[in-house]
Length: 442
Figure 1 (tube, rainbow, N blue to C red):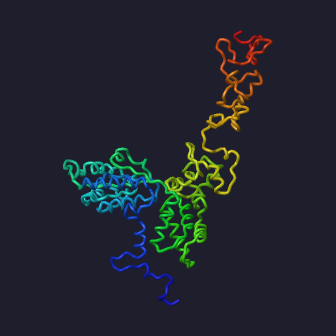
Figure 2 (cartoon, rainbow, N blue to C red):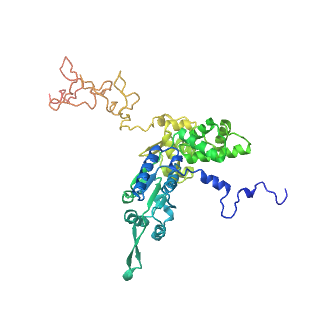
Figure 3 (cartoon, rainbow, N blue to C red):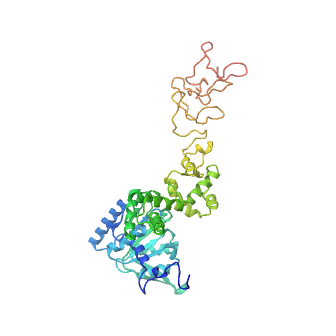
């Protein structure tokens, strides 16, 4: 190989002065720029269209908007679309970037009339900065304290009306005063497969690719309801197709690519399987989130925000008050057989006797099939009693007294209400006697 030869042609990645690279230009074009181009989230798009049209007719900025939902569903894209529909500038930053109040003041004073300020990860805005946003959002002014001590004074600063658009994956971490200052709340949900397939075909057209409908459908099914993941899969299929010199991205190429990426039929990746295997190694749980994070080598927030939602939607994982538990489908997903004890971990509430609340009883015995009886009485907790005898059908009586444990006795006679008496003696079978042989209270 000559000195000036290289397997990579760097000229393809370089652009002229002031010009974006061709690849960057294509990536920027993947995001929709108008509400009419946005696929999915029909209710959210409709609400935004109505709100924007009304605000434009009034000639005033729209109310502040809060987008929430899992990552990768289009919150940032909607913020960009909002600014484009209004014909205003977008100023984007993140919550952790605003470390001090003066960072926010510099950003707000540069806003023009009707501009859109986009705050991603808004739940991570420091409390001291958040308090400055209160008056900025309501009254479009902020008050800065200048100097300190005897020379301290408050300097009011008026800012031009703007629209704050916040995006968060954890809406519950927002303080109540902060949250109540937003006028519109929109939550984005995972996309159905047919909408993801449409998004994949749109991106393939921008890339100049031809994707078979069956191949696009398979990518959509494995994308966990997230356009960002679908786009990532499409790029990897494009790489394999380019190396293989495939003119069309067909079903076989997609299956091969996903297999090499470690994505199975449920859309699970290696980290998902690590979480499930961690629970399986603990007999199905319950297991604390901190323990899972230490075993799989990932942070607790990442597991809870990125991996758990899909596992919960697929019914592979259970979140209980005692910790995470592996559902029966989770055992099957990793190719293991659940032990007998773990097979009953279906997440249903049980009483102290082991009976599943609300479980159907056996019509022949009125006892819950498979429910654990009270070890002391062998009586199934909550089983219906026979109206004729007030005795629990099928419940074993105490061998010493032949009396059904737990049946209500008459205070006047200490006899069990409705219990059949012995025809010869008139005594209730199994009624307790004193040492002299007489029934108590007789």
